[in-house]
Structure formats: C-alpha cells, structure tokens
Image 1 (cartoon, helix red, strand yellow):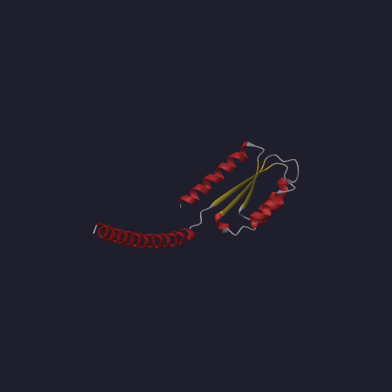
Image 2 (tube, rainbow, N blue to C red; image 1 turned 135 degrees about the vertical axis):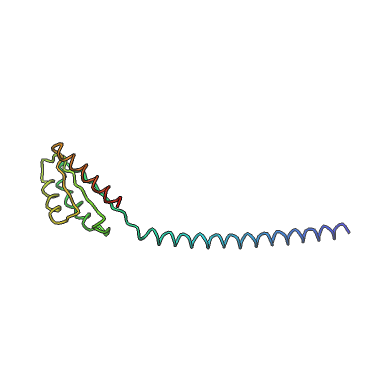
Length: 137
C-alpha cells in the first residue's frame, strides 16, 4: 500500500515538473521573440539617424602619409554633407601643408589649419562652434 502511494506521488511530481518545464519553455520563446522584434525596430529607427561627424587629423612633417590618409577620407561612404575633416598642420617643415591644401581645394568638407599663430587656434574654435550650432538645429 505504501509503495503504491509513493508511486502515485512520484508520477504526480513528474507530471508537475513537466508542466512547469513546458510553461517555462513557452515563456522563454515568447520573450526571445519579443526581444528580437524590438531589436529589429530599434535598428530600423537608428539606421536613419546619421549625426554630423568631425574628424581632426593632427600632422607634423607627415608628407609621406598625409596624402593616403586624406585619400581614405574621401573614400568614406558616410554622407559628405554630414562629414567635416580638419587637418591641423602643426608647423610642418615639409610638404604636409601643401598636400593637405590640394585636397582642401578639391573637397569642400576638408579644411586645413596651419598651427603657426593664435589666429588659427581661434579659427579652429570658430569651426567647432559653427559645427555645434549646426548640430543644434
């Protein structure tokens, strides 16, 4: 008699555990489905947003590499109206400034600053302020 009661109790506990397992399995699938759906929605919303990006390139006597760097900047797939590249020529004694100036003439989003006077520092600050004002709009 006692063995039969224990067997019934064992089967009842196994049945409860299976029900509990199925419940949690369904719950987990529902949560994962909802998370995946939310991730897809948030990605679609964020994909449309493209902030304005400013890239500062400090350079001093970098004539061997500045051309390649600026060439790569022109090959970026980011929208050019949202891109600002500022090359800061830090008193180079080679052709770094001239190479950068040639790119600045061909691409309106590239600006060259020669760090040789306080006037250039003020110009850089004004460019950053203008960019901040443009972002605020």
